[in-house]
Length: 269
Ligand SMILES: [Zn+2]
Image (cartoon, rainbow, N blue to C red):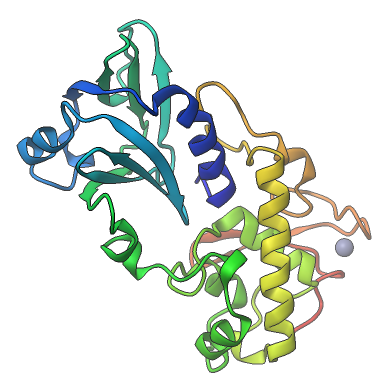
């Protein structure tokens, strides 16, 4: 699943291809991706100039002249720019642009969603309004308040987008490793100081991933440009700890694959 760094890479890459181009038509092959009434969505976007592309957490926001729409890639969604109308069966939404190119939304698993929003107020409208701050602007005291009575494992709290937005399964594993903390540790065991370290570790890991273009696992790509960060992953998908050479343990926490080193992540607070 694309996380904050991957969506940032998609945004930065796509921006060069679509900003200041006009959507002249749209073809929808799988209407369920669009949460609005289909005709309403089409009326709102066709004829509109794309003025900007933004990102909040794991969401992409297409800002148009008079409106905006929010796109969530979920598990496998990706955007491609095509110069010829050679679409694959997984190209579910195709935006025809006025320079003769095509912006295609491709999603093998069809879990991605798009919904209309307000061009000037999208951050305060659903689905973005329910998100917590990204780690870069999170106040550790507020995060501490949210988790200091919780019995939920810290790994799972990192995935809760209402506490901090943008972290998914890969980076939650990496953040726990950087903290030396056992991912099953309940939130209530962390002191304010540890929560400050948690926020700092989250920023550091996401920033490093953004700098390297996001992680390529499964099928992430932005117009053919893949992330390069997978070589730097310390614990996620690893077999052996890069620090102590212990065997990395893989277990599920709330259905999500959790990787940790039994030796380096002994801390339970
Ligand atoms: Zn280790």
